[in-house]
Image 1 (cartoon, chains in turn blue, orange):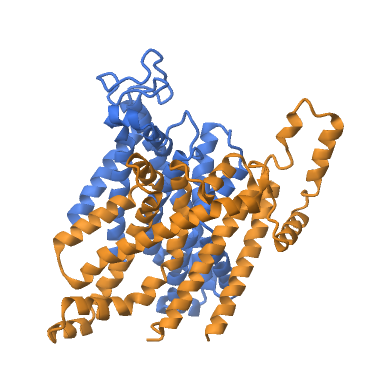
Image 2 (cartoon, rainbow over the protein chains, first blue to last red; image 1 turned 180 degrees about the vertical axis):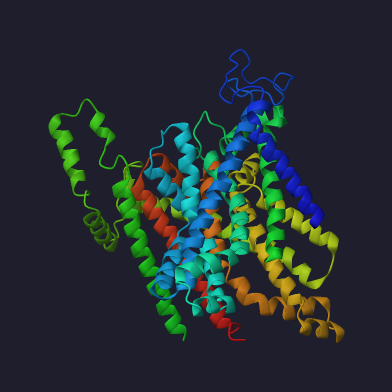
Length: 268
Length: 288
């Protein structure tokens, strides 16, 4: 399994590096339209062809990967930090805050995630500038996706409440907040790391679903979600199987994350 | 004991729906553009008509009054009016709900069948090839967005329920397999095998049966998964269910409809949780 994990990490590093270096690797900007060659077949100039607006698909894939691969972990980080704050403090402090946090967490867990996401997304303007749409999409994922992680973190923090080192720290007069930040939080790191890795592929897939539904990142900015919309045209996919490249990349990245995730769970 | 649990569940459902409803009403009220009506742009309307349109919406300005009105309407069986579909929400649900219930139920059955059928052999035999094959299959399906699965079934002209089943299957399979693997490592299994019990009997009676309460606890989660997957799948497959309705409502910013749909799906999920809890209690396995 260690070998498999190494392979997964290598692939992720390669894809991540390629997306970060999109400015240098991409033959053109994601928005540049080659008006004389719309729907061009794969060629030396356009390795994956062009879309109906004449935009180079390889460039859009590289820039789209950058958006999905930078912002899904950012959203996962936001959700994990929220989970650490709500679940960690609830488990450690207990009492009324614990009860209240449990009610809030259960409420979030009972609400269907995608329905909630659609509802909140619909409260915001649909015709926002592309960059704002990216922030909105991934912020919503981060803000609404913390509940499952919070429950796990709370359980772990609860078990740490009566740990020897915590009791000793309290006995020598450390304040509860100091014990939480200095003693408890560092010991929650393995759980938080595992939850982070659980959330990253979940958010990548959620963005892909939202993008395919037209509620994700707005054009002309590319993301894996809106790049997958080209798959709706079956005849085009049959004619040019390279249209499957975004899907292939998404499956590979999420697959690699699953491999790392299974190892993280094993470490716990 | 059972009645206490039931009462607690009903109170939880009631409170969740009440709070969820208030949150929904607040969202509707605070949404940018609340109170705006595109009919006001109709040049044929005179000033008096526009004033009447605005007056009709003025009662919705206060969140709590808006929510109380919504609740009293709910008590009378009136869920409100969908501006995007130009129909009462109750009528829309009457038309759309059966479609989703049918496809989600079929998908759930399929997902559970596949999940259990593929996980059970792991409890009966130790085959690396089988493990690798099933892990790869579930892993591949897990990596595909529900909308892409729907596209695949649209392309193959397969039923959408199968796509919902495939969304549910990998998560169930992985959880059930890990439960069964834990159960398989118990000492009494080794004893049963040493005493010469058949593989099938050991798997069903000594591995699956004790793990059933934990397996059943997934019922609520799987309902939530199936209904969540219904949105992209119904949109892509053009199936007129509540998933497609939610999407249309999101695009048209029809928040009253969306809030009602969200609460309805929440109710389904919570009832599924309640049922799974009752099944676990009834089986008496929880105490064991």
